[in-house]
Image (cartoon, rainbow, N blue to C red; front, side, top):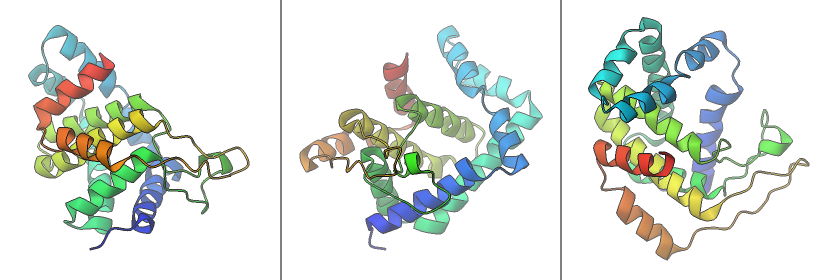
Length: 208
């Protein structure tokens, strides 16, 4: 597979259509069931009881466990559908997401949300990492998730450097700038070799 920005745009379009714009009750209910993972995880990290006691507490709520498994599988289904086992193309799509250079004016995207980027800012990446780490601790495709988590960390770092802007209220492309190849290579060299424990450490440094 040869990566193109259209491929990246199509991936995020399908991803967002399911997780952002689809108002199915099972999706909304599942998202609500996992909304407290960040709080629970932070408490255990502060108490020095992460990850064992953290995941044990998560397991006490059957609905929460089922929601993590349901949402995690849906994410992997879309990732696998678009990229298969092409990890490099997956990585490139996350890099472009971090830069905010994938403009998409197809419905149902509103005028002021036509750029595929992390609208929740840096904490959105941290929250996604927490969700992925939880899924991995539940033994849900942990090796596959590690690649995704690395790419989230890389996209987070790119977003921090580039500070991309969302489309205007009139739907215009903000034409966010691309990251330099020198900086991109530097960030890749740092984030891509990390394991889950090291990713935990790096995300905690930014959001402690």
